[in-house]
Amino acid sequence: MVESTAMAPGEREARIDLAAAYRLVALYGWDDLIFTHLSARVPGPEHHFLINPYDMMFEEITASSLVKIDVEGQPVGMTAHPVNPAGFTIHSAIHMARDDAQAVMHLHTPHGQAVSAMACGLLPHTQTAMITSHDVAYHEYEGIATDLEERERLVADLGERHAMILRNHGTLTVGDSVASCFLRLYFLERACEAQVLMLAAGIDGLHTPPQGVETKVAGQSPPAGIAMLARGLAWPALLRKLDRIDPSYRD
Image (cartoon, rainbow, N blue to C red; front, side, top):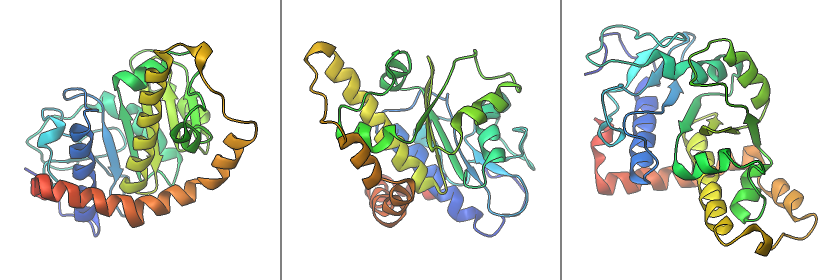
């Protein structure tokens, strides 16, 4: 059941994309029961956002079941679903601080949490890590994110980057669209997974890439390039994948 307020122009498309992102997170096994959040800005001058209903698994979420909320995480209009205002603390800070933050995604995957707890952070030992590591920021753990004062520090730590490792917590990405945000999340999660696997064999046996290669890869994968790759190629392919599996996310 969608809330009773009328949809803004472009809202329907935003709902479909965000519902697709939730389904993809479930498909890749990145969900954490009903916890963590993916959010997207509703087009228009109001500071309204879309987020998951707090009583639904990610695999159940549809475009119409997403809840429209304000910057405080409170529902806009009527909704049949509960929301978790505390869960929007991190997201609201980034949405309000950056005009390009059309989507914000945060996960608690085992691999992401494992790397978040490593003093070394994300190591540049795989191509996927090098694609994303130059755009990754770090934020120290301050407890469960219910303290509104933490928002200022989180935004300062993120700066202009598009990905963040929340120490002892998980991963987060930012995008100018759901598509670019999700692709960045995919790269970051894959890099974390590879790091956990390679460190299982011991850090002493790792092959370090030649000097200068990490910088070269950073130049080959600028944020604008990732966004273009996401919108033009990866996201349409992912939507086709979902449509083959179960198109009900569009409902």
